[in-house]
Length: 222
Image (cartoon, rainbow, N blue to C red; front, side, top):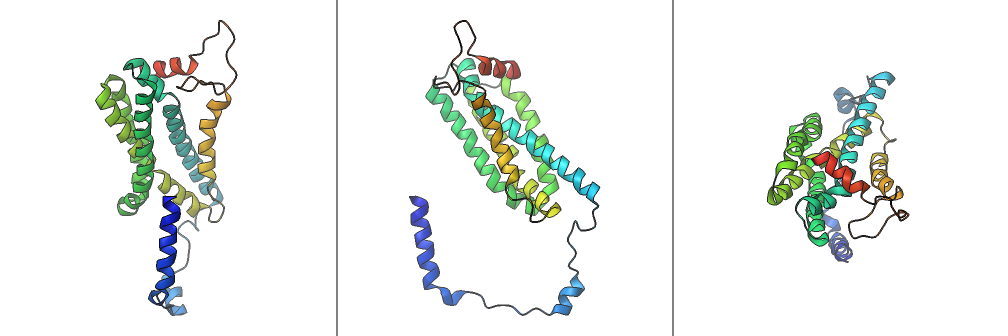
C-alpha cells in the first residue's frame, strides 16, 4: 500500500511538472564518431567471453549457495547454541536478510566509485574472516557478524550482473537472479523442516532422524 501511495504521488508530480522536462540535445554525428562507438568488450573473442561468464557464474553460484545455506539453517544454529526461541532466532534471520537487501542496494554506487572488479572480489573473499570467527562469537557478536556478512556478500550482485550484461548485451535478463532463487527451493523440496515445526516435505517415518538440517549446520559451524 505504501508503494501504491508513493507511485500515485510521483505520477501526480510528473503530470504537474511536464514543462520541467529537459529538451532533446542535438549531438554532432562527427563528434560521436570521433569518440568511438566500440563496446568495451567488443574486442574479446568467444573463448574469452565464455571463460569470463564461467567465472561470473561460479562466483554467483558460491554467493547464492552461501546465502541459501545460511537462510536455511541459521535459526537452527541459534536455537541450538544459544537456546533461543523460534521467534528470537527468526528476528536474527530478519536482520541478516535486511543486511542482504541493504548490501545489494549499496553495492552498485560503491562499485561505480571504486571499481566493479574490486567490489566483486572483496565481496566474495571478504566474508571469509567473519565466517571463521562466527562459531566462536557470543550472541551479540553473532548478530553483528551476520549483518556484516550479509552486507559484504550481497554487494557484488549488481557488479556481477553488469559485467554479464556487458559481455552478452541483451541476453542477460535476470537469469542469474532466477538461478539463485532456485537454491532455496531445493531444500524445500528435499523435505527439510522449518524452525516453526511445520515440515516442508514428507514427514519422516518412525525411527528416522528429522534433524538433518540441524546436524548439517552444527557440523559446519562446530
